[in-house]
Image 1 (tube, rainbow over the protein chains, first blue to last red):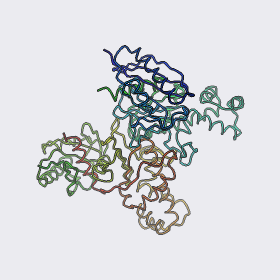
Image 2: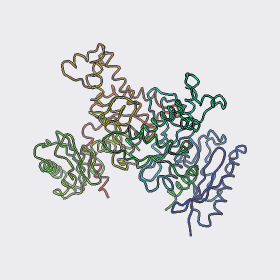
Image 3: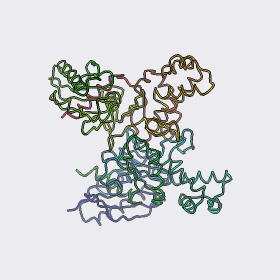
Image 4: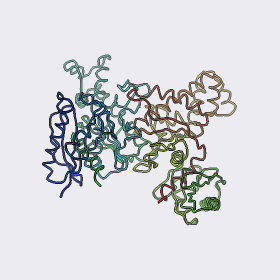
Length: 319
Length: 319
């Protein structure tokens, strides 16, 4: 009989559900709305409802449940300490609250690490050794896979890759540090600093009209303006690619992963992102060896988290 | 009967030998000169002679031999690819050449990783989880311990910690990159750039006389001048501490080790080094949590490599 783990990816708007069999083949993913008004009870009930639906579809043995959640979390104790977009989750033992009604063992993992596990098991990291995932979205999240497992560090705060400082005394980050790579390379922060710069300098740019009309500009706006020949947008995009490549060189020097996988909203730019990053990477990295760590685009899109959450459960409960 | 592994630390001037028992208690370390004129045969003979002496002293069962060597190496094949200070070592299968006459299994590890393993098993990293070692000497070497083992990476070139770039477009490094932390924080490069700066600027400094008299200045000179109130030396030392602290924050963000251990020639400055590094570290790191990764000084001095080489052998041959 086929055996499955259930993956649950908890987001601020939707909760995603999916199954992963023992050979790491994922099923179709479905989603239910995240109930934000009914407190922890309603949230847990929705998670359990979706998990039961997934179990019914499984038609086989279900071994365990993997939950991916925004953090900070206490992984070992299965607790969500805080979750900015889901206000009821403050010091909630979410892992056990979901596990008990289902009668299944459960794991809790942070969403960026779960996505890394998903790409490693079923996506761009398949059949690869150590891997680094960079999620370029609102912030710059990440996950590190070492010897096939998510690396958590001694205090469960490892792989905060967006907070590697690459510009001494640079842009102030929300974390309190200066010059964090997140401020230069995440979709949101790259665009926000570009908007700030446009407001204070005298540069001509098609982005100025967009900014005036919409009150903000997005990384997609920047890339489209760049593709249309806008000089300011080209500089912003190129600076982002240069700092991202700098980060990739540093991960290669420190961790020497087989692959660095680019994911998140900005990875939708595809070759428009990968091309310039690879160009800077080749130029910036040392001359002692060729660039052995490969940089690639993620392949699972928004399903990496739910698939990877189930993958984390498999790694825990397989035996 | 007590069981031992032999450690051999191969240097450009001396070869060190020592024993490590199963409880990771090291014996007294002794050394023999490194024969540089007799080719590989003479070098291997000296290593075997020292190892036999160590075996005779052991008075117990010897389980294996661990060799630490400067690199680059091919770890899996046990080959020294190149060794700038020992010219005969070019593509030499050193591990097996030493193992055969001794009739013992052997391991080959690069010297910085071996030192990390030594501090982890017997020094400043004892009873600790993941650990990072930084060796501040001619260059800035390093080792990363994850789950108790040396981290090598997918292509055996991980933990090249001195080549993390921390200043965009900064000082040109011998590796071809710019802004590597090694250029700002190793004993030799810090002093060399300080000397260059003194020659081209109009600053007053007691280091100017030393430079004129000796043709160079050392990190010890810089620290002594700083302690005596020299303004230029204070700035140089403080900049080094600031960049080293920046690197430590980055290792905390990426790896979240329990401890970062400072070793190598410059660590002899003791609190003169640790104090300013800790001060900058507290100031630079994020405000989301306290600084959980601790920074400490190494405790094994120059014996870390030979002890750690034996430790690597134990990890391989214990079962």
